[in-house]
Amino acid sequence: MSAGARSGVLPVEKGPGVTSFQVVAHVRRLLRAPKVGHGGTLDPEATGVLPLLVGEATKLTPYLIDLDKEYVATVQLGVVTDTQDASGTVLETRPVPALAAADVEAALARFTGEIRQVPPMYSALHQGGRRLYEIAREGGEVPREPRTVRVDRIELLELDLPRFTIRVTCGKGTYVRTLAADVGAALGPGASLAALIRTRVGPMALDACVPWPELRELRRGDALWERLLPPDAPLAAVPEARLDAAGQRAFQHGQGVDGVAGAAGLVRVRGPEGELLGIGLLRDGRLKPERLLHPDRHADRPGTPVLPA
Image (cartoon, rainbow, N blue to C red; front, side, top):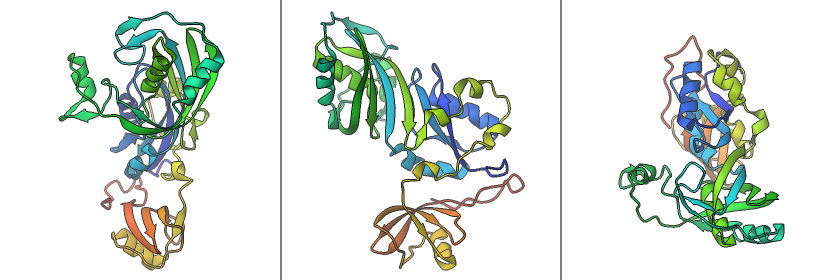
């Protein structure tokens, strides 16, 4: 993508010891872009795929958060912490029995499909107008209702007691820290998360990301503009609907469009020349706008107005 185009998705590798927001802020400075967001946060010590959305692509954030994700997680048996990972205070240590791979795999099988998770206190969820981790850091704890999350697959990659490594494919809202703690409890000695790498978000894999050592050392963003993907690249699995000129005008004014062919559900909406107009909801041939995208801003037109979503 040319440096003039100011909207797109930049898959980067988040490094250890930085927050997702710090990565966003670094890239915003490099690109000198007013709007940069991310498509799903990672804990500070976790690493891996962090999709960054630039310009008009930030309007597609909810759809990226909905994408399935893949992680490689190392679990430490026999150590229970208040954060459910290695960054927290150790609450309890227990001896680890001589578990075989079959024992671990049997426990993992209990946590596939739709499962119930109690969100950890050290999380960014809001309750009573405050984030849970803010309450936890003050020594507080509040009741949390279990939530249903989806775990599509858990594969045991390595067993080297007292640790084991798994590959997890899951839906949005799944806490891998909590999964590690719950599996450890099911096995007996308890557990915490020792390391976490997010290897994929939707179609975006780690090997296609801007590596963290490279990103960290950059002082200019020119090369990053060249690596931007189209705003809808992560949504390649979402069907498309093509509009004629009249349909495009109606859609861009927030109006429904009748007589649109395609299966019911979310669609990527394109104009007569293939330009991305936004996301729509198609039902019984009627297309209703969900998110409107303005054509890419260009360096020579920084004040181009943005249509409301």
